[in-house]
Length: 608
Image 1 (cartoon, rainbow, N blue to C red):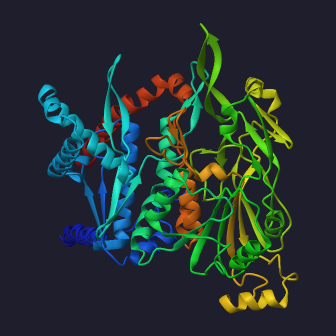
Image 2 (spheres, one colour):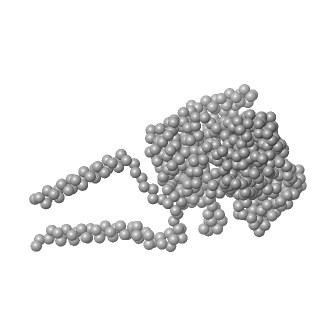
Image 3 (cartoon, rainbow, N blue to C red):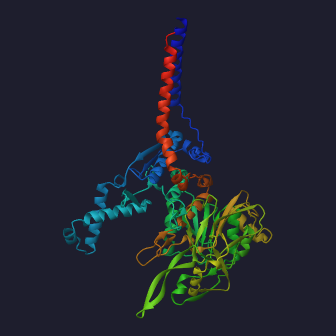
């Protein structure tokens, strides 16, 4: 009897312990991330950001519904990440799942449509008769208005191919994006953006986009994308970014997207060092884009002292004059030195821009006359090796990013500069070569694109990030009068930066500019021939974020998400074996368990 009583209460004690453990588990959130790359863990900068949110944040996820396995994986990863972030942010982070129709309500679309119609009427167009003849016109215009509005927000559609039956498929338009809001401010997050990975087709051997690996890269960037958007929205005051003019820098429609991109996250102002006494320290960073006129010693000293006072410079320079417009009238043109007079300044900081032109087999295309038929020119899209597609490196600025489009780029070399760390952030592909000055650019050279043996150089640097304490070029050159001049405005004439600083040197001035037509400007990095937008804008955004005090968030781009795929050949050869293990083995185990249990019961309760 005593033994039975003890047995009864041991079960009761076990039940109480189990209930207590369940209660504790519901109150305490403990997760163990066993992945080598810590895939399911938030980094320290993200945790700190979420714990110190000043304003409530709302995330609207547009990737909702049923998807194929690859997109479902991205959907689940987004959901897991946001809930992990909410665990640290608490009630200050709200997650909602919605669709684009709810983002722009029907009433708003109708109002935009009526505004559009009224504008057309005022311009003398008979739109009312068109609406009567084409009853679907209103719906089509409203859809286009919504698409344009979403595009302006940075929400891009994706045409998803859905397999229905063995030989049948359909297309479905989805929006793999999210919107992060704080008050009346919002930023769009592109969940799908990331480096496209190519894998050989097992049948043809041709490299094709690999959806699983590509989305794996997109997953690796999810934490960075959301943390970056939240950090920007939490800023009380936007950093001031300057755009240098006065030395032939472009200020026309080719700068449209650059200005729009910078103004979205920063204060933006133009500075002319030829007329300004100094470059104010209030500028967190200054862009120097495609100067065409030599820099005077006075301007160079102003730039140098701005750097010595802690300022950041982003150089996007072409050392050679080489323009596409020159080839519009002749098949040959000469690339010559612009004579910008900045070599000594850049050399002092640790970099040299070479007088050469980069040619690369990985390049954009150009529309050219490829022949004549019936006396009329025949146009074709020809690979143009002077428009290299630059590749990122393992540095957080460009890791897991798509190629960056360049035009008539030069290469760069590093030189000795004490205390300066030099990181290559943009390079050529592994099939490249250079053309030294005096360089004759000839369309006849496009034939060499078909001769890969000529492209023997690999990963030639085009963009370099310099970090450390810079030494002034004028430390031993400045007269007492010059020193007194800068002391008047800065309080001191500095011979070195007091704290670590950064400069970015990219040997292509067109990289952050955009093309344009008479009707409208293109986006930065857009190729009208290939109809592709490359990662130029993302590169500029990341560089500015990194250099204006948000380096910890940019470092999240280094995170990796390993894609552990099954070996297709092994799956095919061992298919039957694993089918038997998965189907037959459980049945055998159940039968074996039943047999053992029956044998045990008979043995225990058998009469003696």
